[in-house]
Every structure is written in C-alpha cells, then in structure tokens.
Image 1 (cartoon, rainbow over the protein chains, first blue to last red):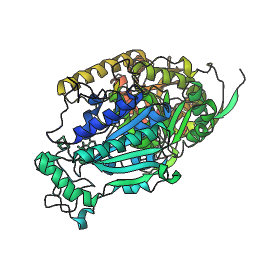
Image 2 (cartoon, rainbow over the protein chains, first blue to last red):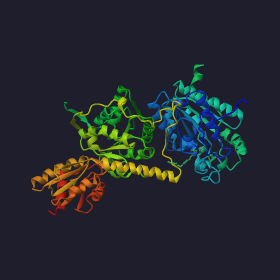
Image 3 (cartoon, chains in turn orange, yellow):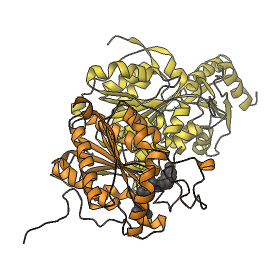
Image 4 (cartoon, chains in turn red, cyan):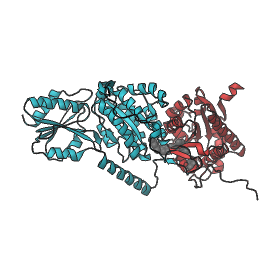
Length: 249
Length: 355
Ligand SMILES: Cc1ncc(C[n+]2csc(CCOP(=O)(O)OP(=O)(O)O)c2C)c(N)n1
Ligand code: SF4
Ligand SMILES: [Mg+2]
C-alpha cells in the first residue's frame, strides 16, 4: 500500500495541546513541511512566542528558542546575526506580535532582518482566555470587550501586513488563511516562498495567517471557519502586500 | 608592558573584545554611550557583530538569542535602560544563558540625572526582574580593575550559565586612568564548547531548546531548586573583596566603586587626626562577602562600621547582614549625582565614634 500522508519530519512525535478545530495545528504542519522540503531542518532555529503556540518549541523538529512575550523578532535577530547561514523563523500570535511586540517586529522588518515570521492572527488573545487583541474586529466580543469592541473606545483593528509592507527592509509580505484546502495550498506556497527568499538572503519576510480560535470565539470548528471567511477577510484582505522579486520582473 | 591612558567606558568595550566577545547589542544612553560607539567602530574590525537596537528591551532579547546560539555576547546601558532589561535578564536566568551586562549607573529614580550614582544596587543584587534568580555582580573601583575583571566576567557567565553584571558608577565610566593590559587576548576560537546551544541539529542530534517555561509546578520547583543549588556554588566560590588597612582599625569604611576611593581618602584624613581607619571593599556585591566583613568587624579594635554610598542607603543592608550586630553600623551617602566629599565621610566616622 502506498503511503499518501504521514507526519512531516519537521514535526516531533509529540501530541499538540491545541483545541479541536484550532488552525494553529495546520499552520505548524505547513511550516514543518516547508522546512522538510527545503532540506533545512538541520540548519533551522525557530523562535516560539508567548501565546497558545508557546509550546511550539516541543513541536518543531529543529533547534528552538522560547522568547519573552513579543520579543521573538529581537531573539531571532540575535540568533541570525550570530549564525547568518542558518534559517531563522519566528512563530507569533497577534497579541504577541501586534500589541506587546510591535516595536520588535517593526524594527526587525525595518532592518531587513533576514528572518521569516509566521504571524498567526486569530483576532483574540487565545491563551489567556479570549481578551481583546489589537486585531479584534469592531463589534467582536472579547472577555475585556464584553459588549464588543467599541471603535470610539478601543480603536479599530491594526493591519500589520499593510503596515510592514511600507518598510524598505521587507522583502515579502503576504496575508493568507487556512479555511479551505485551496487556501491551505496557497498558504503553503506563501510560506515556502518566504523561506526561499530568506535562503537567498533577500531580507525580512512575513506571512500573516488568518487563523481560528473556536474556543474563545464560542463557535464550533466549522462555524469558526465560516466566521473567519465572512468577517475577518473583509477587514484583513488576503493577498501579497510586498514582493521585491516583482520589481525585477 | 607600558601603561596606556583609557577612558572607563572605552576600556570596558576593548576589554570585552579582548575577552573574546564578538557580539554586542545596545541602545544609547548617557553616561555609557561610549561603549556602543566604541563597539560600532571596533567590532566590525574583528569580524564581530555590533547592532544598535530599537530599545534596551530589544537589546537584551538580542543578547538572549545570540547567547542561545552560542555567542560570547554583551550589552551595556545605564540605569533607566537597565530597568528595561530586567525582563530579559530574568528570562536569561530562567533559560540559563550566559552573557555580560554592563550598568554604568546614573542618578534616579525615573529619569533622574546623568551624573554618577549607585541607586541601582537593590536592582542588581536583589533581582529587578521576576522570579527567584541571581546575577554575579562585579563592582570595580578603578579602570584597571574594570579591564582585569572583564575576562573573568565572561568566563564565570559561561561556567555557571548565568548572566554577569558589571556594576559601575558613572564616574568609573567617564574618567580616564592609566591601565595595563595584563592578560593576553582570548581568541573566540578558543572558547569552551556549548553543546546546548541552538546552532542547528544538522539532523544528527535531538533539537536543543532554550526555554524558561516549566508549566508543571513540580517541574518548575525542581528547576528553581537546581538554580538555587547553582547559586549556592557561586556563593561558595566567587566572593571577591579587598581590604585596606583594616588590621587594628578603629573605624572601618565599607564601600564599593567610587565611594571606596573616597573612603580611602577619608581614612587618610583620619590618620592625620590620629584615628586608624580602614576600608573594606566588596568587589562582588553578589555574592556578597558577608563572612569576610564579619571577620574584620570582630576585631577588638573596631568601634564603628561606616557604610559609604552614592545612594540613600542600599548596600548598608548587606553590611548589617555581614556585621550581624557585633559592631554599630552607620551610613553616609549622597544621591542623585552628588558625591560625598572625603571630609564628609571622615566626619561621619568621627560622629560614629562619638567624637
Ligand atoms: C509580559 C507578559 N504579559 C502578558 C502575558 C500573558 N499572556 C500570555 S499569552 C498572551 C496573549 C497571547 O495572545 P496571542 O499572541 O494572540 O496568541 P494566541 O494565544 O491567540 O495564539 C498574554 C497576554 C505574558 N505571558 N507576559
Ligand atoms: S484557545 Fe484558541 S488559539 Fe488557543 S489552542 Fe484553543 S482554539 Fe487554538
Ligand atoms: Mg491571538
């Protein structure tokens, strides 16, 4: 019998702690497959964030560092400057990257730090129990916005991909999602492109992945995918926001 | 070897390079900016890494990453900037990462003043970040000592896998003194192996993980106990101090950094007035040389212990622990960038002696 599907070599044999239907798992798989396919698992150092993906250091089958909340891009900078020939990536949530860590991600992008960031935007603080994130949609309920995010009080969602795309140091920035097989394939292509550009030394690359949090959204896994498609994509449009390879074409 | 005239901040940067450090991250702040300035010029010449970060928070986290990747790495700052590094220092201790952090202290609290002070003693020795952790803290009193200690600072950091702090007051950073380069430079190729570092598995070993998270309480307790055991070994082996004329002294000044120099000048004034005074100077303020201070205090001749600081009284707590009630301990200090004069210090001793 032919094997049509197996665990990626990029993932360890550890069972993840993610909730049923949480798309963090799919995104892990895509990163792991990419590193395996590029043959770089043995020369990759990943940086895990503080958030639901904090245990990513146990799941990726490569050297890993666990960073303080929001500081992953600075930690990755330290690693990459010491080991410029290695592949370095950060995996960060929206609270981690778009709130407490906005300074670190912005300046890593500004410097054109030759790292890849996987930015998992689920419009909520998952790990701490569903508090409002800077990416929470206007009107979306959160445990610290019980009546829904009020624009006049808490502003409207921050669009990181668009923001970072304005920086010269950013080489490739794309926003994708994983709500359907087609979207998963697209996300995989984006992630792979980002790592390929890193291998070519082209500068900072970030793939923002719109992701679900069925638990804190209070939705079933399937409804969560629908909610994401219907509500998040209009606010966070999918697409390529920066691609330095395009200029050359 | 011939003596050379060096400014404290530049000397500490050069000493780091000579100690095999090839990696520096920092952010400008007076009175230590000559350190990043020196590094920006000289690190590239030796093939090292210099990067000006966007904040002290970023700098210490870059140190975390670089250290985890196996580099001999340092950062420097001054008081308000060192406050911002506390999170990263706590994480480094939790993840057991070596590294050297220089604090060229200025007056506080808050923005304070750019003039020399010693108000960060509690932060350095009690832990300004969260959790049960310790740093080895060297407090040199002259530039020769600064450069002599730098190599040891990196070596101890590697040996114990913990951060080491060089705690200087702004005076030491800003002044110039003749020094000698006594130790031969260390080549980065000759540094100890770090098999725990995240340098890539080459698919030949299990992944290395740099981490301070131990979510299970039992595991976190075991981790803390292991750190405690390490700190106990440091306390046993790494106390450093210096005494000057303490044998048979009537009064003993206890001071570190610049105030130790003032205390020696004050002792000279007292000598002329027929009072024998000595100086006990901790070189490590953590681990604190409690027993040595206690021994000195026990002498029959000693009538008073006078602590001198450029603060409103922080190290005096450690002096009281060391002296442990066997002799009266008093304090003289000025804060916020004002430096006590030798006369003031001598008068404090006279007062303590009831004269
Ligand atoms: C300095 C600091 N502040 C706050 C926290 C608590 N905290 C842990 S995870 C988290 C939010 C994570 O949300 P996000 O980055 O969106 O990740 P998700 O769990 O949604 O994947 C917060 C606030 C912390 N660990 N450290
Ligand atoms: S809380 Fe949300 S983000 Fe975290 S694992 Fe569960 S579903 Fe995923
Ligand atoms: Mg989130």
